[in-house]
Image 1: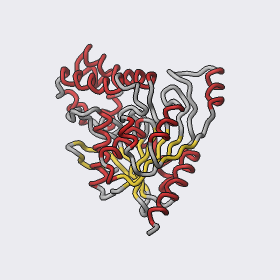
Image 2: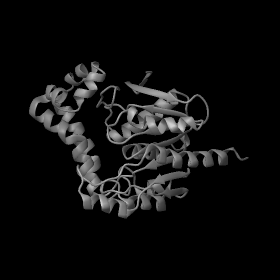
Image 3: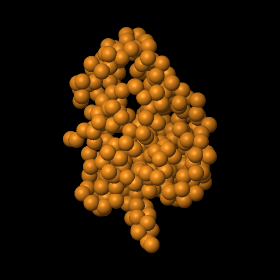
Image 4: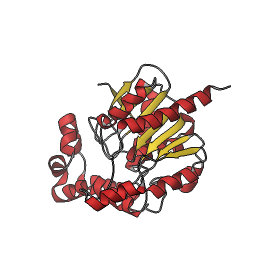
Length: 290
């Protein structure tokens, strides 16, 4: 699988499809590119070239905390630079949850580089802010405080990154644990202090300034509240919103019990791709009209 050096960090990536408009698609959490392959492959089959990649600190890409910006901002800048390296700009940018935030952040910071946005599971609200701060960073902070960088390598999900890219171990062991802790605490505050935002990482004014078409597939759980998707739709001028589940669907899950921190329903790749491809086809054809 190809690797590109982007802003000093080696990123693992793949391009699906050989012709058509450029698209990039990013998954949620710290997922790797395999998590988005089912949706990305269906988009590529519809005659698009789709770039998927492992973000820094995810999958088989390198670990780095050198960028002083919040991690989500770093991911958006890395995505932009990777696409520029591949001569894949302008691009239709999409993603779920964290991928939604990264795509929107790239459109805000580099509006000339994004032709349209297609996203699902926008995350916002007090529950999301608390949950994302804890789930993204607390395990790493606890390990670093208790046993330094060796504990980070051995007692956290960094183990998986080291297995996939063994050089990450030396990279982590060379880090100053005090700097590591200070950086992750800053990244953590980016979430914990921003539950008031419609979409974590973007102000309402930022969202109002997005001029490209946007397709939103509404969230339906506490981490991705339906009302935040609808507020996002209200704020972004040229947006449309679709629903794959009803509020009653989620209530049924809550009533029957659920595992994990919140009740949720998982969209199928076929359903996501159907809505995305319809949007991309319509927007691409509009852009071709003189």
